[in-house]
Picture 1: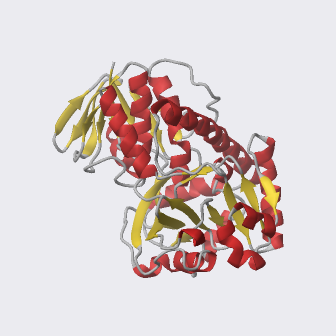
Picture 2: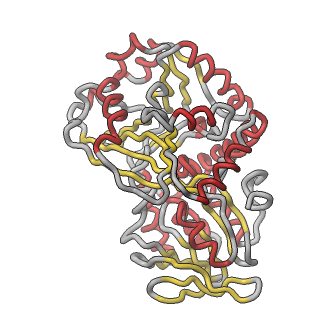
Picture 3: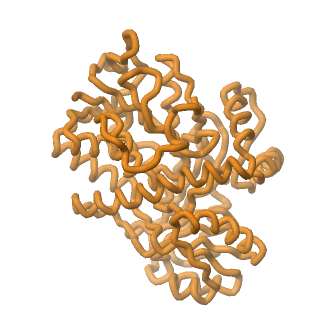
Amino acid sequence: MRVLVLGGGVIGVATAYYLERAGATVTVIDRQAEPAGETSFANAGLIAPTHAYAWASPRAPGTLLRSLWRDDTALRLKPRLDPGLMRWGLRFLAECSAARNRANTLNKLRLCLYSLACLERLRGDEGLAYEQTTKGALYLYRDAGHMAVALENARLLREHGADIDVVDAARCVAIEPALAGIAGRLAGALYAPKDESGDCRLFTKKLAARCAGLGTSFRWGTTVRGFEASGDRVIAAITDLGRVEADAFVLALGSYSPLVARSVGLRLPIHPVKGYSLTFPIVDAARAPTVPGVDEHALVAFSRLGDRLRLTATAEFTGYDTTHRPRDFAVMLRAVRELFPGAADYDRPERWACLRPMTPDGPPIMGRAGKANLWLNTGHGHIGWTMAAGSGRVVADQVMGREPEIDLTGLVPDGRL
């Protein structure tokens, strides 16, 4: 079977890998010059099933409302005329009940836990090294009340397979000595010993090289415009360099998936949400963290990737705009200077902004939709790196007519498009 995978980020490349392993003849198309050129390029690095919470929650409407006049909220929404965002926003609000938040979170968690197991097997099978850390992750709290709420929320994840410990400030420092300077301001943390981190871009590039060795063909610098269909089947992808035919098609273009899907009448409920990242060269290894995590007070994620320190933060609704200004990174810079003073050269930042493909309910959309030979693997939001290996395996199984290994409730297109 000839399968065309649209998208050369971590989701598309993971899908291509599992398709090759299942015996398909695979071609991957992406507009960038190499793998992981967009959302997978400079993400937080966290592989974190314990951060599987759905964004749509009873608290989310208030956060969005405050963001209309404040710039220090985790979610930022500025008024503008955007019918697509309005449609998406109404569906998001409908998912903000406690019951829907619970269901959506558990659907995401199921995929995240499966994906972590897939990643462990994949890197063992292929011998991949991508500056990974497998020492767990710390979710830090400054306020005891905030931590108590977090612990109550974490109970849901713990009851459904997530490994989460409650640790005090002293234990935080024992796990991560680089936090010694801030220990007096910590109420404690949630420690997830099975969470990981790693360079998503490096992983994707190495996995793409492995795919090429297995026979995958890559077409870089090629922009997908839409599909050509006949009856109930797609017969070709239309690109700026011509038609590309295949027997089956996987749409894994992240935030750009809706723009391509509408060529066959699909309206995907995915909206781009901009996130920001900073990367610094480490100058004092003893002061830099070796355990990744999140400062839950500032909502800034951090991870060490070899000799670099990576920070990410913010979710901003700006359409397809990826521009950024130095002030967009101010919260991250303040947080890292406080957490890890002197660890890195904070005057030499590498700034990056990307678009996270968010669904209103939270889980990605994986499965056949619109046409008999078109599959979706998109909408992974802010934890696509966490979900990548499992999503790739699930969709490869679907394309090849095999039964996926996990329950796909809340993850397939049915009832969500």
